[in-house]
Length: 332
Image (tube, rainbow, N blue to C red; front, side):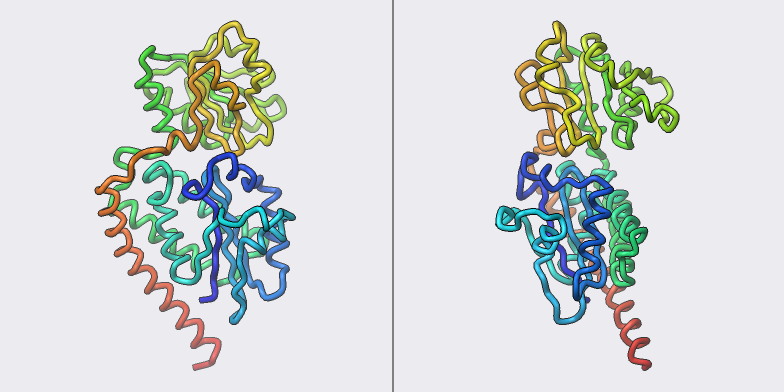
């Protein structure tokens, strides 16, 4: 199994560094193609989320590259600036990592639900780009199955399911009881946050991009207005949550600082950042790193040990498939 991976994540770099490697889908497609067409590379998968960027490569036997070096080459990034920022894994270590990652056991927010979908989306994109070989297909499929088993068996998500839950906790525990919330971003995370807040009795409005109005579903009970009016509307909200894939700030300090009345709480769920950090001078500002900052408890250590036992079973399944494939190739 000649699979290697390299990744940069929240445990190795803060959001200011990670956002340099956060990739839009179109950019992922370009980099996947560049990686796949490199000599000795049989397949490539890119996983890019707010907390991590990871590169998985299936290579010909005898070829053991540094995946991050090849990623930097494909992405036209200066590799010399990346020393010490990432970790490389090989073979079984890659598989164990991906299983735990998909379960949410390695997330900043313990047991988060979104990561398993992001892992599945990564292999789906590689397949659509014809960049995933059979080994990576089985590797990811088996790891996702293991991750689901870990989640259902150990129930990591009992108390900390997602960034939506963390957002809700911040607003519910705020001493001045904010009730009116503006959500910028109507993608999966934005809608999830909106729905969770509505369930708990918050009054929620969402911004809509004018050119996307016909494609967007706003959760039932939420109001909406055009994104271009966000600064005009902000004074009537107690809190603002932003979760977009925009390469630019959705809340800029120059505009925010001029508001006579501004939201008291700003929650930035995006990488790259949506909210200019300077806005923290005028409001309580939380970002994706703040939400995930908490102690690693003894209970977590025990759960990780139990998860490793589950991973072992699925690792053996992967090896069985490898042996079967080898027998077919040899004609035995």
